[in-house]
Length: 262
Ligand SMILES: NC(=O)NCCC[C@H](N)C(=O)O
Image (tube, rainbow, N blue to C red; front, side, top):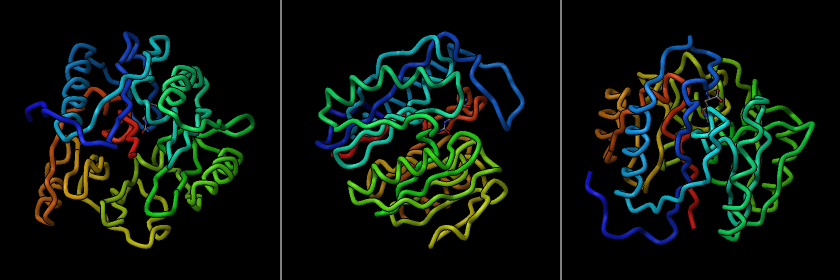
């Protein structure tokens, strides 16, 4: 896709360049496999270009090169309305990633709050659908973290509903949502499909991850061609990016950016 001539007002995506230690990133549900750093950088560039092609301005959060998983920037901050919630990641190795995000969201004018001990929360566990924030309770996010987030989100008109996550790393590793509010997931890793008023299974694991670029346009991983076709058949436009090197580290298209909708 060609780079656009102009961004659409109110569409800003935070991204964070992969660091030199990327290959040392955590894996929980997958077996460790070798990550090609050069290829990962190319894929990350293409991912960012794809956001820009859809009218999104991209803003780089300062790198956190000591943290292998910092590229998965979605885990460090949750934005909702005028609020930015700095998270307290569940994995000790990932806690320092949050520091470099604070200045960026402050400069953007967000009201900044944070999740603190004993709470833990990863942004990848937070799925907003309409006025509900579904929050995964699992390996990275605990009950205290969810309780703190609930208090913060109430102030911006969101209700919070906890959803158990055992089969996947994060809630959004298992499910995301289409623009019409249908929650989509790959059944083998969805613990509680009944938690969502509208749920539909998709045929591929990577097909469960959509970045909603606008009401008609979805960004998906190239690893889910059958699901992309399924959504095209429903009238959506779908652009795909190859993120194989990030998938080896249990990353997906959603966690490589934080979409700030103005
Ligand atoms: N939100 C996400 O799904 N983030 C992916 C994080 C992957 C990273 N290797 C981790 O285990 O934390």
